[in-house]
Length: 292
Image (cartoon, rainbow, N blue to C red; front, top):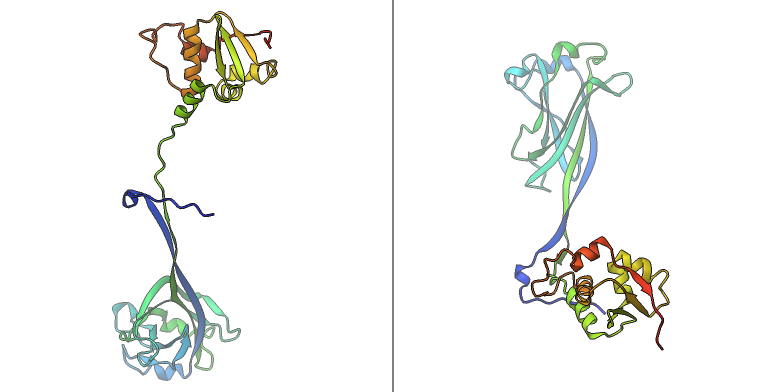
């Protein structure tokens, strides 16, 4: 049977909840081969040549290739490359978030050259309305590209790796409300147990006066009582306490059960009070005959 907590002050109570944003990354690649490189160098500065489109992550992309730089001062004498979202892609009209990596390929092995791999770890935002996209104004110097390690038969190849980050869904993981728990009143319950004598299973005799108590309560609250009542005296039902006044023992029991001292009528400041006796563990227990 489920337990339900209700409170009229629920608005004032602390609560917590969790939710998840589930992101999915789709990765793909495209190889752009530039043939007749020497002919493309006849294009002017900031003149882009658009590659064919390719699809990655459900979106259509293309590469803008500028053999003589994109017109910025940093791109003079360099090849510029940019990844762009196809404006004719009718599947999506908002923003696409993606990472990209451009690698110059070895013409013999077809593997990326580590010296000419530009890897952007940051996620960039692409829109179809931005024809420039994201990429590198200074991908490689034209004079370096003339090296036969990269240029073969007037051709070279660039590999473009694209990782598209899609937010698949958001998910609420439930709401948890913390119920205000009232302060413990265990000391009151134990105090009532001491006064009522209900369930008592051991009796102490102090100067002829009898005190009913509970063996396991005393054992739990006092190492002195625990050593005796669960040890040599575990079978005894009556114990004689010597060398202690009735008021002191009564107050000691109250302190053990309730963690507080009763009003002693001004006697609470005496050095031989119950707190001193309890903390010093000076209680002496002696076996007594059980009167049946």
